[in-house]
Image (tube, rainbow, N blue to C red; front, side, top):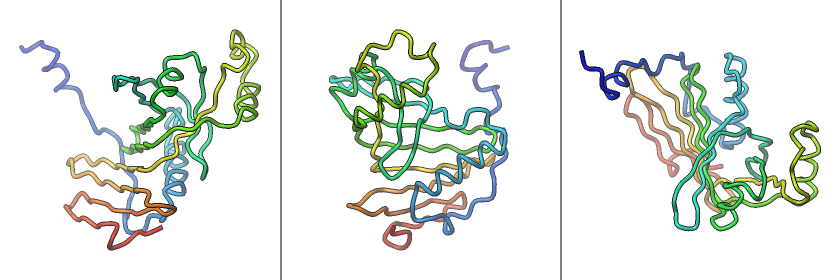
Length: 199
């Protein structure tokens, strides 16, 4: 019997969820609207923490780093997350203000990937976010160290898996003040932003 890590990993089941019906031609032109639909559907399907995501950053040398955190807000200004300026992510964002977020909702076989430059929220918003935390969570945070950041996305990908591995990808890319949408379907169908989906 092969007991290597590779063999053990191959034996683990994957794509065990149940994807909802998806019609890429019918999704909204605004990726924010689609994200709110998907995260709500994930919660309704029993995903325990649908607002948890992996945040990837890189330091000045381009060395990547990643951690799991909670999405604080999402609107037309960007995708908000928070932490201390003195943390690893804070130091990395100070020298390389760009990041990516990845949401994975296994029960519904859906993932969302968001990437773009990162901006700091105004100091008042960061202070309000810190104040909303419990007293225990605020303990030890130095004055001015807590920051609310926003990813201002230039690319958002919605991925829905399929047990036959014929996955569907819907990709929004920003062009100026509008979004272009393209998608590839599990049946091999592809539609580009020049054909449909101009926001």
